[in-house]
Length: 82
Image (cartoon, rainbow, N blue to C red; front, side, top):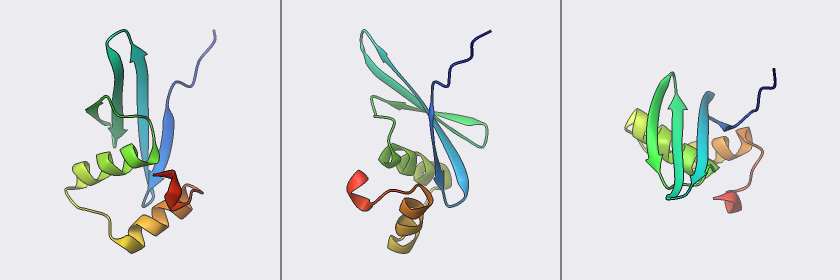
């Protein structure tokens, strides 16, 4: 049996956010999985920015500048990746 990793994962303040994204004939379809809950994100790319948006919606709060810097470091990215 062959198993494909068909997702990308990011860490937001220690919490894993998994993004599933598929290109279809009618456009992209992206879903975020957070703590076993799925969120349909429509035509968003599977990126750190999308993961942050999903995390903020799930927790109903915005990241502070300091938290944002920590998230970028957790994912070994710089702020230009957004």
